[in-house]
Image 1 (spheres, rainbow, N blue to C red):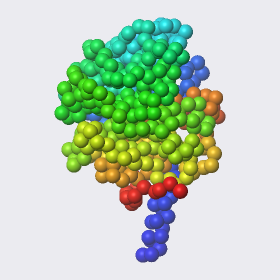
Image 2: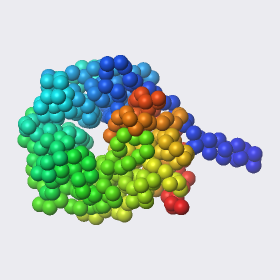
Image 3: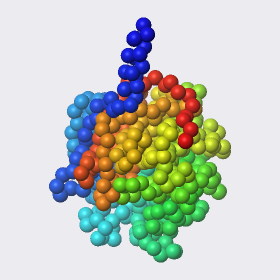
Length: 440
């Protein structure tokens, strides 16, 4: 019996220490096309075997058999397709692909670049897509970084993003602001309203108002969080987006700002990601705010999570998600809540196992409303990014009905590729630790 437990212990240790999930390559660099980065992924809420991913600039990759086989499609729109994909599914199984615009097809060389947000819809599991709906066209302003949310049942939608008076401008009078728009079904989007009180600059840096992510509750209440000038801000609407708080709520500090220096990565951010538990469990209504910063030093980036169980009036102290005791970097996290059971899943890059730029991908998960987390390495092998090449601004993850699909970019010899793995809840190691490791 003792021998059995020893074997079991080392088997479990091996399971937790090394990549044990089959990694699936969804995209790789192709001559003449933009390198694949910044992926987004969504599980079809009416058919979980159908999973759809969006990849910069204009790629759409989907599976109809739960990840056994995949097919790629080039997304096209009269407004152009210029990256920052953000995918979501409503309860009917309709899929929505939000992205940036490039109507002239000339990119940054034309003033029409980034002139709006675009939403394309698929009602046939990603096999075909609408031409797209225009959101927030307001020339000469630039529209960037859209993130959507959908009501769990009614299926009304919203999207938030950053409007730049002029993207990248050093003019001190140039402003960045957080905008919000709503649609009943993905068409006919409302005139955008500005949510933030204090504008940011236009440098796409710490003093830029950016990273707005929305969530919608079963009761129709809408919540939005974003970062600006080293602060984390929060706003909410109790009438489905008609009225908002008179004053933004300052809910946290992001020490050093949201722009992070990570060795080997051209640029990285700690922008916040908001999630909401709409399940029927005792954790229903919990808001989760995920971000990263370097409060422990520029050589020690960490992932943090705050929670609110009273609609954002009060937030818990930040909980460190990465449980290592090293002074290494954990960065570019994303969060998803499985609304069928309230389980929380977080994906991020992690360098705890090395003293150089080698990078793994980890998954953290909680089954007790974010009170405690376990974590496991999900990448099969490490990679080393090249700071001279663009690596992208985010990872992504979706979870539904016990299926978890993280998606990430890796870089090998300066060439990017996008990967995922299909994780069933039953595959995850049993939660054995209830207290996060303290930093040395």
